[in-house]
Length: 138
Image (cartoon, rainbow, N blue to C red; front, side):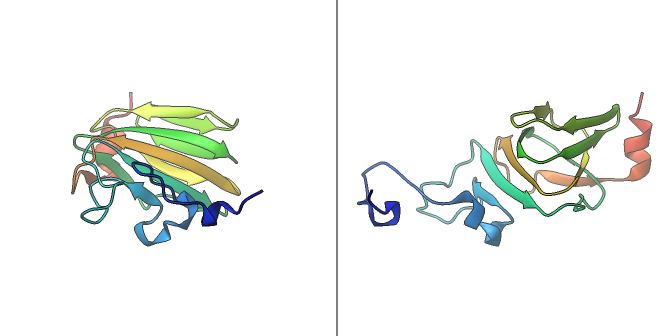
């Protein structure tokens, strides 16, 4: 078997390793990639997140324009929304939320998650106060 790192470049094909994109906190597709990078796009953002367990979002947040999809690769992951909590517990479990829906999250033990947002808009994420999030609970 040939070492894939030695494989020739193929025109029109980009390859890499999502787990190695720690410089952008796991985000490896989106508007934030450098000019000329084939993974630069305004259409979508993709993130590979690896957690040891216990990590959580520092407060409520939302996106003005982007819809978000979160897919569990392995582990256990909780997402909190004003209407309640959603647990991702089986490989492939996912949750999607629309723009302006506050959320926070926490990894429960070693966990890997893929997040996809569309469109990819600079400065789209914004903090939401606990009071604002609580007011949105049914």
